[in-house]
Each structure stands twice: as C-alpha cells, then as structure tokens.
Image 1 (cartoon, one colour):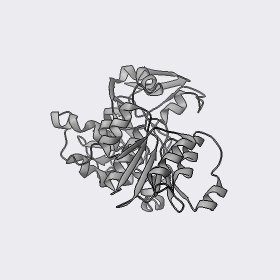
Image 2 (cartoon, one colour):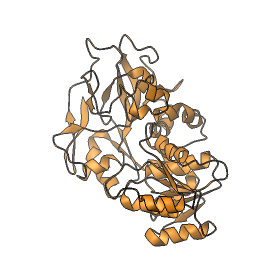
Image 3 (cartoon, one colour):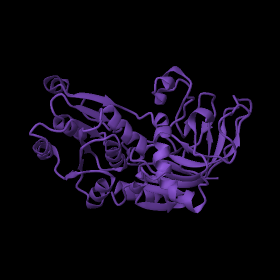
Length: 357
C-alpha cells in the first residue's frame, strides 16, 4: 500500500510499504481499516520543521476515519463494513486511566506509527490502510453512515475533526471550565483554536474572542461562534482583552498553540481568579510562572486531550448538523500530494488539509 513517511526536516514522501495484517498469535483484538480520509495536524509540523528531530525515516499521521475491512477473533463491538472514527491514539477503554476519563494515559495503549504493547506495528494514519490495535476500545462506530455515499461524503470533514481537533478544542474549553455565560478568549487561530471557539459556543459562553491576524481565519472564527476578533499580540493583546472585559480580562483563556509566547499571552490575559485551559502541544520555552499564578489566582488545567471519551458526546451533533467543525478544512488533496499538504500548512496557506487516499 501507499503511506506517508517523514525522512527529515521538510522531507515528507509517499512510499510503498507493507500492507497491514492482523497479528498472528496476538490477542485477536486488532482490526484493519481502509482509510477514507486523513489529515495533517499542526503538531505534525513540529517534526516537519525539525523542532522534533527525525532520527530515521518513520510513518506519520494520527487522524483518520475509514471502513473496517478485517477484525480479529476477539473483537466484539466493531464489525467488517463499519464506518469508524479513530482517535489520535490507541486505548483499550477498560483500564483504570481510561475509566477515569484519561484514555491518553491508557495502561495498554500507544500511538500511531509506532510499536504497540504486543510488539506489532500500528500504522501511521496518513496511508491507505491502518492496523488498529485494541480495536474495541480505540474505534468509534458511526452508525448508519456510508462514507462513500453522497450524504456520507458531505459528513467526512466533520467526522474527521472528531479524531483530534474538535475533541482537543473541546478539551481546552472543558479544562478551562467554560459554561453558560462564560467570557472566553482563544489564543491560536489554527484548527484547534477554531474548534475551541466552536466548543465554547456549544458550552454556552456568552462572549468569545478569537485572537487572530489572518482574515480568512477571522471569518471562520466568526462562523464558528466568535463574537469578537482581536489581532493584537503581546502587551497590546493583553491590554485589548482587558479593555473588552471590564478592565480585568475574560473568565477563561484557551491556549491552543503550545509556545512560551502563547502561554504567556493566556496567563496574563485571564482575569484574576480566572482559568487557562491549555491544549497546545508544548514546543519549548520557560516553565509556568508560578509567581504570576500565585499573585493573580489564575489556574492552569489541560494537556493532551483524551478525545476518545468525547467522540460519542459530540458525534450526534455532527450527524444532525448542529455541529459542523469540518469548515476548518480549507484544502483537500490526494494522498500522493502530501508534501504540498505539509508545505501549505507550514506556510499558513491552509488552516488544515484533508487527505484522500
């Protein structure tokens, strides 16, 4: 089959790789999924840019939806022919961490493009097929949907966001304590930040400020629920947010970038006693300024988003059209043009790119 392999900084290729197969002699809990759509994540760009070095060529991609082609003997809840959403990690759904709502810390889980706990290789998501370990815990079945019908194709971008960015934006909002009447600012206008805007609206925020200097992304933010847009950054951005909210700042700031500058922006923008919900993948920088947090009583909560636990909550609203986060995809390319997909996102010519194998 064909799949994406990253060789080094700004060197992404589509190559022939072995077809995935169910593991012989394993637990029988695998499935093989034919990928209908995958995408490039903002976090993939840290590897693409060389911030996270590539020591040897490796498979990449962690967001996909598709159709089940094979299942192991022990798989009970996923069947051949099912349309499924795969979260950006593998989990069993039964260990103590999964039961506590933190499936990203599954005691038996793992990550796409690496070895699983039984020694088998879990394919990267940016390819034609994927062997899925722990299929019952990992995959979410989309009931009564044919992804290749006209109506199913229209749902594909929205369903694909549930594998990562919509659930991650939702995690930021939940971690920050967004609720009815909350005032919210979102730092970051990538796909996660835009989905955080949608999540804040869904949870009842009364006012949502998107911090963005990009006209197209400003427009998307307003479509998804932003009531205000602030293009300023740094001290000017902090001052503008405080001006908008009684001179003290919003109740909640959602940090969706992962740099030292974005976290500083978030912490200094929240009102005293407010909260920062953070989901930006850390990309280096100073540790949290405990003195600032002590002086302002601003709390920080968040981390890698356990999106598997959110999919079934968000899915019904995607299926009935109330939630349409797929608008964050503003470029669609065939898998063979994955190098252009990465370049377009790296150069901010695209917010998020959908790939069709």
